[in-house]
Image (tube, rainbow, N blue to C red; front, side, top):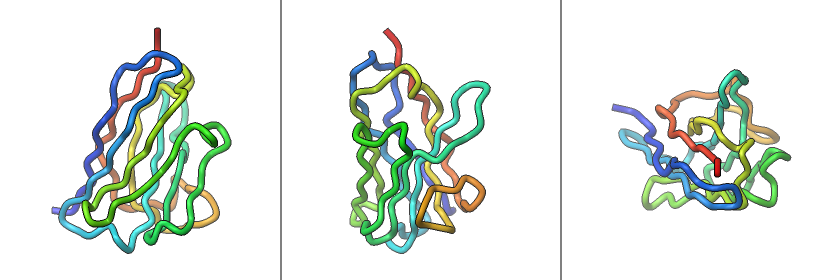
Length: 124
């Protein structure tokens, strides 16, 4: 069964850090661009960060640039999103997905396999 599984979401205080993981099963991530997307309550899903199959191209949304770092470990079939200096506005359900058109940005409409999401809440 082809699937992506996210983990690492949690409740964290403003200024804190989390690392999200996206692990694939049933297929090899090596040749796929993987994106992280998020959806806050009452808002549309948006692209946060994308990384190409070889890791040579990475995109960050302006809202997370300088705070989030995307990396991949193809040997572990996993992509990581390190989130630092978290803000309340980062609160959302975070999803990973295979991306069909990249670069330059992370288009929500051009995606394939999605994970089930992991919730991140930034609150004091």
